[in-house]
Amino acid sequence: PFAPDGTFPIVIQVLCNNSTYNIVYSLTILPCYVVDALNTTDNYNLGVEFYIAHPTAPTNSPVCIVNNIAPGVQISSPTTGDPAYTTGTLPAGSLLAIVNGGNILGKGGDGGDAFDPALGLTGEGFPGGVGINLTLDADIINNFNIYGGGGGGGSMAFSISTGNLSPPPAPAFGFFIGAGGGGGANLGEGGDQPPGLIGLSFYSGGSDATGG
Image (tube, rainbow, N blue to C red; front, side, top):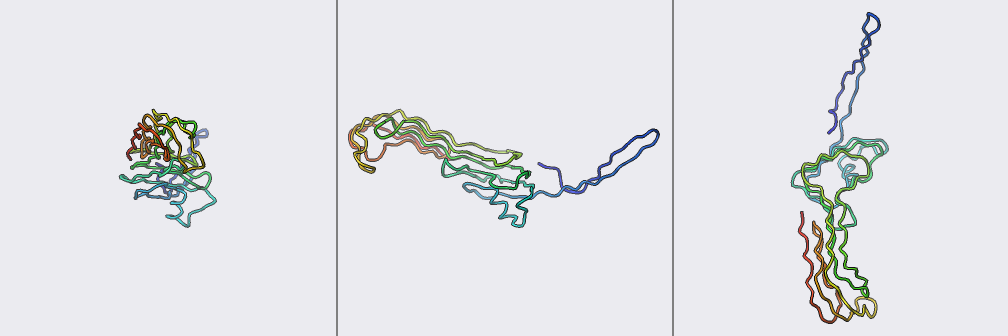
């Protein structure tokens, strides 16, 4: 993704009257550091992995990094609150290229349970998580998949209940009708009947989403 390293001549030619002058410079391009992601993992942090692979690399001056994610590798997150992949903390002004041959997948959001103000439920699904978080500019060569997590589906259910008579896990009394929302793509959980509800229930839980 970047120019090859090495030393290259630069010739500036100047014409002045009937004379030609050549000014020659040498340009040296240092090699980039290479960080290979070869194994499936959660919450990949390039800033951490870079200094594990290259512990003597500078921490206060810009660096050039090529991060190769191998085919078959899946980088994901068990929660929607954390990105599957982040560039993390690297020196300001660094040059970064991400060459992705695998899957970078944010966690899917969970489906909604039901609408019940007494239990504090809105019935809405929850947002999915971030797939890739860039903390500095980067060139991305994407040869496979980079996806944020899908949002969970809203429920088609309602509950009329007393609410919890005392702090959870005390029960609530009432009835529960409908179906929970489906989980968002990449392992979002389907909406389910809240625990501790006592009464009539005609309810189907939402489907869990599959993985990448």
